[in-house]
Amino acid sequence: MRIIACVGACVVCAVVAGFAQGVSMPTVGIDNMHILSADPAQTREWYIKYLRATAAPAAGQAYLGATKLVFLRNEKAQPSTGSTIDHLGLSVADVDAKLKELEAGGARAITASNDMPALFAGRFIQDPWGVKIELLKDPDMLGLHHVHLRVRDPEATLVWFQKMMGGERVKSAKLDGLRYAALWLLAADSGGETTAPSIDRAIQHIAWRVSNIAEARTTLIGRGLKVGDPRPSQGVPGFAFLEDPSGVRIEIIERLQP
Image (spheres, rainbow, N blue to C red):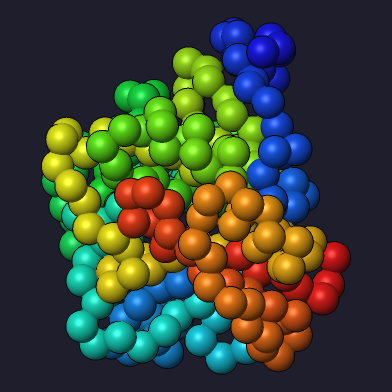
């Protein structure tokens, strides 16, 4: 373990290991997330209008920061609440103002346990299609802030993801999680409850960018994981799926561009 001073804060952070042991690319980390809804086109427009997402060239896709959101049709998808991928975190300048704006746009304020430190002043909404979103204020990182898992053993989950996917483990007075480029992966205790696998939920899966799909798949299989066969797509040499022990659906994807 090495100790570093956190920039702009009077706290000491413990940073544990790095990307070397995982398969993801450290400069990219989380490449995309898939959102299921009964109306992908309408969902995409809502995210562009209310969450300030940027339209991607491909239909049914948009960017929140550097992370691509892929909207897919599924009329039976259940809300993300109760799933292993519980919610997304969005850091904004004014939490109350954003909450009012999203409610006016059809989102519903919900009561949920705040797993973030009190200094972030988090509030929760559910979008019209079932994605739970935490609105928080982290001045150091505005925009898409984190993906929050809800599992029986948060520490074991973070250790697993760092070993398999990489990431920089950071423990500080502000956050304890894995940092992937400009996005955090956090994990909260489910309180002993078994959460549902994410495959049929509004936040279906998280995708990590890898430099070589065949090598990444071989590495993960060598670590005892069951990984699906790679499939090519337009502009994508290959992508494959697996799950973590808690039922988080994971994609590994190789892209042509750097």
